[in-house]
Image: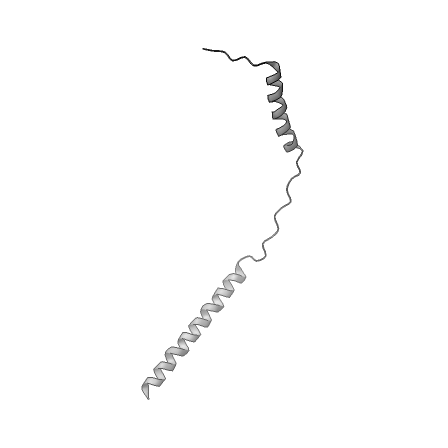
Length: 72
């Protein structure tokens, strides 16, 4: 088995690289919390419900209108 020997300069360069990467992360500020959502989803659900009720109203009108015109 072969033993790898590094010079002190290589070890110092690796240690300096690791410290340069780790130290700024230790001093980093924590991120600000995310802003609250603009809507909680209930307004979207209510909008969909209004559209579905409008579709049902139009379909009811068309079905009854066609039913009345066919009896004459």
